[in-house]
Each structure stands twice: as C-alpha cells, then as structure tokens.
Amino acid sequence: MADAALDNRERLAVRQIALRRCKAMATTSFTPLHDRILVRRIEEGESIRGGIIIPDSAKEKPQQGEVISVGKGKSNDEGKVFPLDVKAGDSILFGKYSGTEIKIDGEELLIMREEEVLGILKK
Image 1 (cartoon, rainbow, N blue to C red):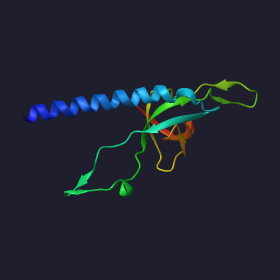
Image 2 (image 1 turned 90 degrees about the horizontal axis):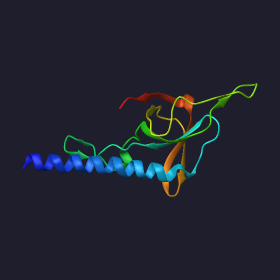
Image 3 (image 1 turned 135 degrees about the vertical axis):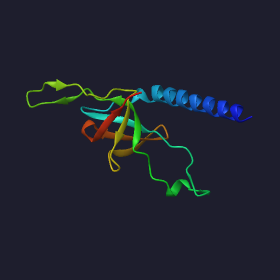
C-alpha cells in the first residue's frame, strides 16, 4: 500500500514538472530586453512544522526559479553584445529581494538582470 502511494506521488511530481514546462513554452511570447531574464518561481510543497500547516500568506517566497526567456545580452560602450550565461529552461537560485514581480497572462513572474542570479542548478 505504501509503495502505491509513493508511485502516485512520483507520477504527480512528474506531471507537475511537465505542466510547468508546457507553461514555460506558452509564456515565451514575452522577450526581455538586453541582460534581463524572465523567471517563474519554483514553488515548494506544503510545509508542515510540528503538525501545524503553514498558510500561504506566512510562507516565504522561494528563491529558486526556472528561466522562461532571456534577452539578447549585455552590450559594452562600442555596442558589442555579450550573450547571457543563463538560457531558457535553466533552474537558477537568486537573492531574496531580486527582480521585479510582474503578471503576464495572469501568472506571477519575475523579471531580473542576469547579475542578480546567484547560480545555475545542475540537473
């Protein structure tokens, strides 16, 4: 019985990842300019501490996200464009107060500069 519950949770997790990727493809109608990137926060599951369910309003926003789309890159004084290190589909870590929250098609996303990204998570 426990194995069946675990299998169902694994299937649900895979479905959620697939749905998130489909949403990422649908959101690419917005292209950030220059060295900016569009990021979707990766939400954590329900947190339970000591048997108490923490309401959404009390939870901290995650500092991990998936890059949805990227600008062409940063340019120097001569106009040469340097491409970004991050690309669409990357999982990234960013600071607590990084980026600006925006809504596109009813979905809350972040737009930030590449320099606000702390690192890229390896898969």
